[in-house]
Length: 117
Length: 111
Image (tube, rainbow over all chains, first blue to last red; front, side, top):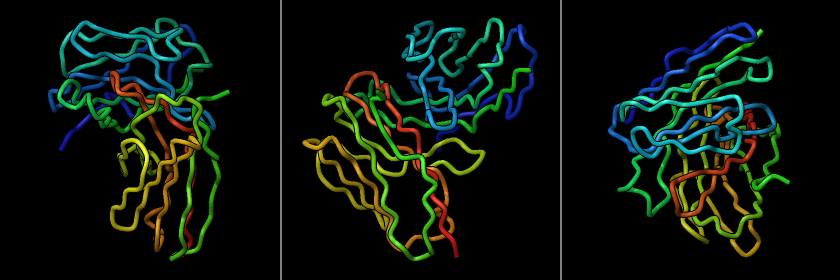
């Protein structure tokens, strides 16, 4: 089974702090994604990566950056956390090249609930 | 206007009833349509996957896609309390697997 793990389930930070959210997948997937999930808004894509050291902006990249130094690990960075970044953050991965023709199933981690005070 | 519209609910049904969920979308380039189920405090998991128009059945679940109307549906027959969850529709074109999600519909099946 594909396993996507996230470093923390719950996190509380203060405004202005630098925040790192870590995601690791164990199935050698090419694609990795970071979403945030808010009530009434569903999942919104922040950044995604289709290869090591490659990244693309999603729909709401402002205030975030990402890092993918190794294939299995994709980090989301909040350079200076703000209260409007309080949310559930979900990481996902998908096979990539082998499955691209069918749009790729995305496998999700359990999420990190981040509260910024 | 959002690309994908989904009623957030909650939708409450008695055990054994049929649950009917739907999403509408505006981008005619979407080719792949998915339904994810998300239990409380968990990440979403893929439930149904459909390419282009048509129906797909898997046990108690049926997914329908009507591309001419830009409308997709998910039906759950003989609903069980264990079906209580949030159901998210998702769709994508055939490039990069970048999905657009609906807001999710919360379903509550009461015994």
